[in-house]
Image (tube, rainbow, N blue to C red):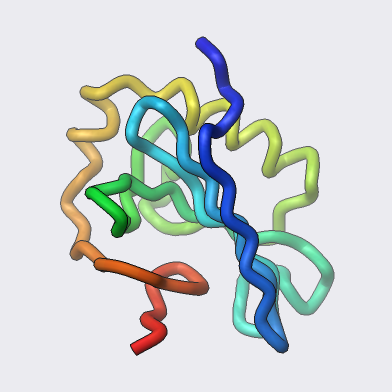
Length: 116
């Protein structure tokens, strides 16, 4: 499987940076570093697995990536890369099985915060 995302959006805010990865399996990742993220004050990343629905997305918690049922924090660049491979390799069943989250629509930032 080609794990390269077919879409990456990078948003820079005054106190954070967010990278949205979208993979061909319909899943993706929101990778964020900022003052309100887990590990952001130490220069580390937070990763949330997401499922795209049209132009919007929502958080999901597939067991193979998020065993604690939450976003993952205090991640190095290398750990983020390893997790992106896992997200890119999720099956349709794993994505559907973990899809019980509240959907966010449209433009979002820092794991679900709305620009509205």
